[in-house]
Length: 323
Image (tube, rainbow, N blue to C red):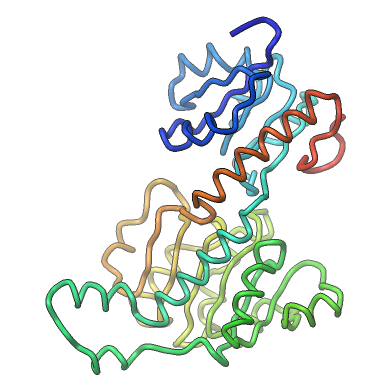
């Protein structure tokens, strides 16, 4: 590293990510990779960082950023980053939203289709040598005319709605502020201000809201009790949005028909009870993780850094109040 180049550090060390970064890395920055689980490396590296790309950051780690001028989340959900401490330190936070809505929306629809068509069980049946062409038709369902309830209609929720509309679904949504009528018409969605009524009306409930004090365990035992017995719950946002104990009990008892989960309360740990539930489709937080998404995200990170290095506000900076 030279004295003149800013040091950009990525805390995602997977070889594939390193390959993506190598493709977009400009000559004007030095780049290093840091494992946040390596305490010695963290203590040696964070004080030297000019720009940090991470998925999570504790208060203690924030305090080590002696010369950092920009923290970026490699995605959009920055609830695992202590932004309050960074704000106190005057360090802005930016996100990389490119391709995330497309990737997560496709992911949510994949989970919905997998449950509706019993895909995991049918695939296992085929691989065991069975040919149950008629038997598996019982329990498989169309999406057309089904009611999809979307909780959280931001960029990702809107992308889900656009795709669900193509399947001919009846789409209702809930968010803090209602969309303009013209946007509702374009997306083909209807506002439902009462989450309990949304849950009761929906054949499929999909979560696309951020994790906040208001949304923590927004799907709980009381709300599950209002769901249709044929309902599916989809979560590709944050695991804490669902009371996992209540969901597991509902799945085991047959209170609801199934769940498609990409996120969990204690990642990377997954409650072992989910593993024995046949109507739970489980994925390891893949969401927006596509080749196209990672490449676009890497390029967007560099764009944010270049704008910051030129003395301007990063285009994807979140929240106001930072200089």
